[in-house]
Amino acid sequence: MDAEITRWINSFAGISPILDRVVTFVTTFGVPLIVAVVVLQWWSRDDRRHVRHAAICAGLAFLLGLAINQVILLGVHRVRPYDMGLTHLLIAPSADWSFPSDHATASMAVVAAFVLQGLRVRSLALFGMAFLVCLSRVFVGTHYITDVLGGAATGLVAAIAVRLLYRENTRIDRLLTSLL
Image (cartoon, rainbow, N blue to C red; front, side):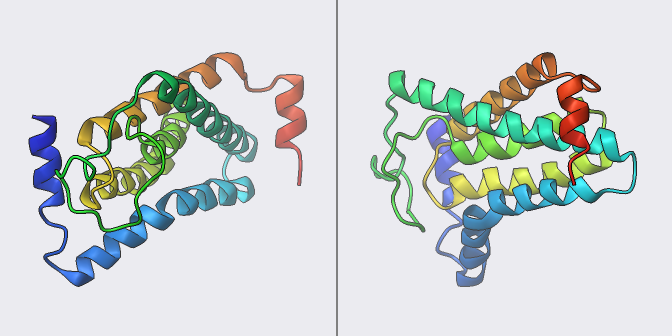
């Protein structure tokens, strides 16, 4: 089923040069754009301290999620779908293993951090961006759908861990949220 869904999503690659360019742009610049959106939250006028706390949590979850992925990669050596002849690759090949997707982890960690802080509108906007990034990774042929789902799960776990360990209105939080 994983291979079939992956193949189906990737089957749209190569049909339209315009669509290929748009999706390649999303897969290349989607995570940096999400990071830029989070950074811009620092200057929010609404509930500034809480939004800044959410931005810090998002950054910590982003980093923790990617660190967790590195540990997973030590034990899980999944070959990429293009190496198996399953997908048509639209971007440069990756040098590491396929599972889990770092792009999915990073983008969904940010979304989960904002969700856990109760910032619904921001969470929905970030989720839309993250969903497109995740879908793009399968479309361009570099990941299986389960790589993306595994990455999203890692991002969620990281955001939950940050939520449990980094509390709002602690001394360090007040110091960090008062910067700039």
